[in-house]
Length: 404
Ligand code: ATP
Ligand code: MG
Image (cartoon, rainbow, N blue to C red; front, side, top):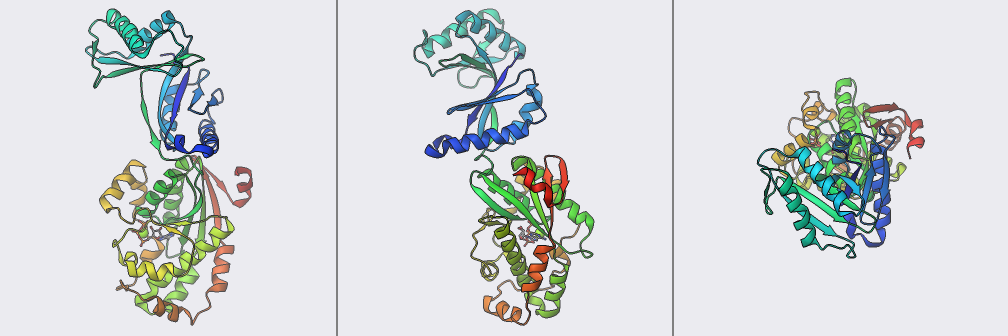
């Protein structure tokens, strides 16, 4: 079929009033970045909808990319036609014939944004419907659940014709809700937490705590691979900060009673993430915590851990069951990476019986014998930053400027 454009319908952003322009602009930029390998495409952004003009590029290759972009409710490969009855008749017949299989049902869904058009929606449905029935033997009408839904949209400048309505990723365009830091382990939960918050328009940067030689290069690679997946959803790039955490973990194990090491470890991770978030001008921290899943995720634990910062901690999985988290992980293709068996820094140092109900005052008291501040500073200074672009890795922080 000779589609010449893809019509994009906005999701929730249509309701955003004055901010609408910002939302539409962000969405346009995200789509532009995603289509960088299709240089002939052009984007026409309008208040109501957007068009990707194909100019000869293949819709089959572009459709999978659009499916991953937040802020798109649905989209349809389409043709722009003159507002001429015969032209529309011929194009509709060609379009339906090219996808028709014996016995398929159809309906015409007419929309008339421009009321000055000579036919009303009932007349459009009737006229083009009967033309198709006359010319395609075996074709049947089903207005409730048709196999082929021929959409004819009459606008003031032209008529748009399409047959397919493809579901978009929903949510809000990347970056429209601001920036947050995602605490990214190699596990199943944190990438899913990242996906859900990105879907609500957050731009995320990842923070991973790495404890060589107790955790291997393979464990680090796992987090890099997860980050590449997240880059596809984060508007095409993902910044990952890898924090050297060995010395701090060793000190915790020397100085803090064993059943409190897990609580102290989490508190220090949070303090460092908070420092990085200030440096990167982020306004919140996202974690993959889920209530009651493990010892560090009881209410008492979260209370004792949260004590070190006032920065909002977003926990999108707090009330989500593990089985549902696994389903999302499979959908977003992070599951198989997450289940690779390489150890995480927390698993290596995990105490045999961590406190499930730690007391904030106790952990504060134990920590008071050690000055962690210089070590936190050093860890932040020695943090390695990697930028992952859709399927490509750039090294070091100097490339960052060119991206923003
Ligand atoms: P996940 O599946 O995300 O690893 P989990 O169920 O294993 O989560 P925990 O190990 O208690 O749970 O970790 C809780 C959260 O703390 C993680 O979801 C993540 O946000 C953060 N976290 C844990 N370990 C690390 C790490 N090494 N680096 C960065 N963040 C971490
Ligand atoms: Mg984990």
